[in-house]
Length: 82
Image (cartoon, rainbow, N blue to C red; front, side, top):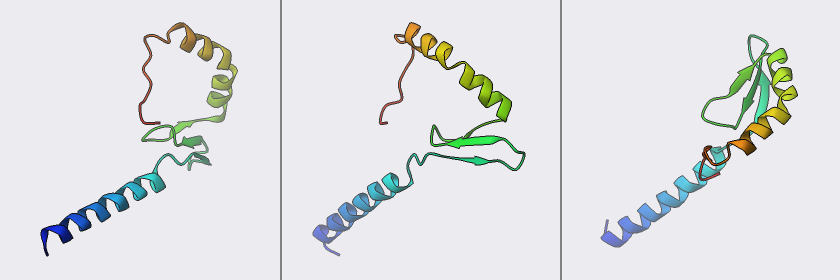
């Protein structure tokens, strides 16, 4: 293979790799686990899994969580690239 052919192949593979990253990245979804808990996918590397009463308690805390985030905004980091 010539150097030009190699560069074309590298460019093609890079483009293909980017497409694969986009296709598999951050799919949101939910499912019931084997133990009967609710798993939420797409927030990070691993799912967030809590039982029903834990989710309901967390949802009841929505206002408190938002207020905490607002009060601590300067100290909290954001995940770049999303």
